[in-house]
Length: 281
Image (cartoon, rainbow, N blue to C red; front, side):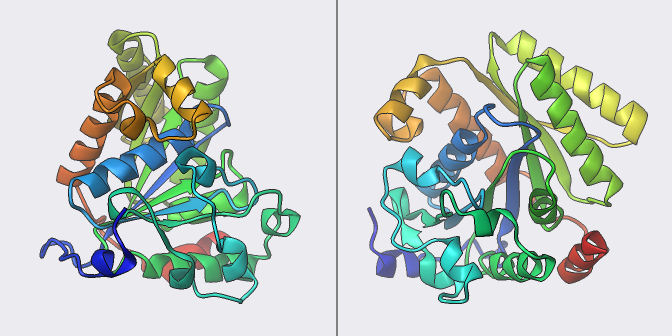
């Protein structure tokens, strides 16, 4: 792993002085959202980008388990005012900078509105001096989740071909659109049996979103069922590091590559603080 000094000396791509904020979310749990967020962030860091990954599942974070890292400080320290967010960063694989969440904290599960607003502002600072800020949100459409997503430049909604997961994903898309999200909204289809099934799921959801919400949903990519993921979780290693040549790892790397080459900033018709205040009201 790179040292903090080495990471701090990385040179940013000159065209990206302010990094792109990507929120990875889902309408329900169990769809592999955290796997997507953590492994895509690692792939971006491996390509030489300066990347910051935040586990924003405030009360039930699990990125530390996926990466087998013992977190010294967490977002709980930031919320409690003991630390600034940049002070709780830990350096992971390929220089990836990670902010871990707490686990089993009832207080973090029920933040006051002003605390959420302050936390979003803290997170927004992580975009600077970085190429990408990847946020792994909690599942569902609770206010903190929507809060974080509305502040992002891009939102990846993760689903599986199961009907309940698709319904949850559509609910997430609907809430974001109706609350004025103006960024780049994409769908990730995970745990598909084959590429055709994944494409069908995307096309169906994109058509419904276009018809009922007048919203365009992009296709971030698909991930097929792969037992390597189960084994990697059991051994507490990111699958792209444990099995770099597996199909799932190659697909994750391809998604990261497209993200690195794709749109970076949205047209900010509303500044960050105004978007957050509008949601709180």
